[in-house]
Image (cartoon, rainbow, N blue to C red; front, side, top):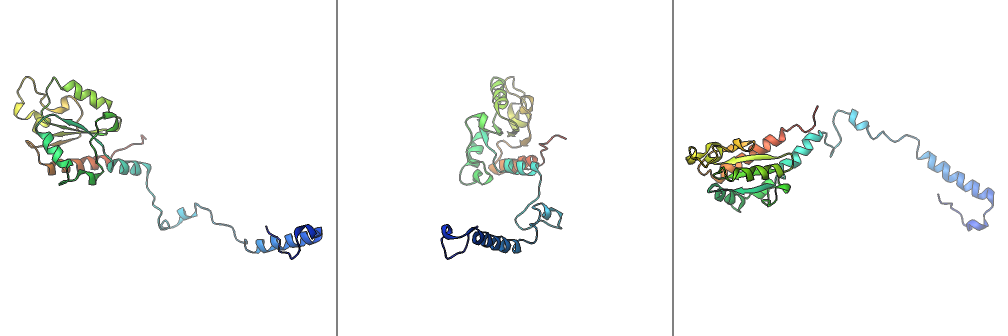
Length: 200
C-alpha cells in the first residue's frame, strides 16, 4: 500500500496518514466486490476449458510407456540381423521412442529374443528376463521363437521361447522381415495401452 502525498511520510500527521490509508483501502475495496471463482468450478461445466484434458492415471502412464520402450539386446542367431536392420536408418525404430538397445536388463522393459535358443543358453535368457524391472514384455522373433523352427526336434534346441519366459507377441518367419517386427512392436504398444496398473 502506497500513500500518495506531496509531503514526505515523516512530515505527515497521524490523522493525514489515517485519511490516506483509508482512501487506499476504500479504492481497493471497490475493485474487489465479487469473489474469485472456485478453481474447481470448471469441472461442473459441459466441457473443460481449452488446454485442459481429463484422463486417468493409467492412461498417462501407459501413454508414456507406449512411447518410451527400451529393448534389451538378445540376438541369438540369424533373426538378429533383421532386428539390427529394423534399428537402422531405413526403418528407423527411433520414431517409436526406441532409440538405443540397452546393454543392461535393468534399463530395459522389452526383450526381443531373436534367433535359435539352445537349452545351454536358456538359463541365461531367464536370468536376464528376471533382472528386467516390471512391467516388462517379451517379443519372440522368428520360427525358432514360436516352435523351434527348423530345429524343433533337436536335442539341444528349445522348441519355443514360452517354455523359458512368458511371451507377449510372436513374430512368424524364417527370418521375419523388419516390417513384421515393427508390426509386432505396434502390437506390444496396443497391449501396453490396455494394461491395468491400478488394482481394484
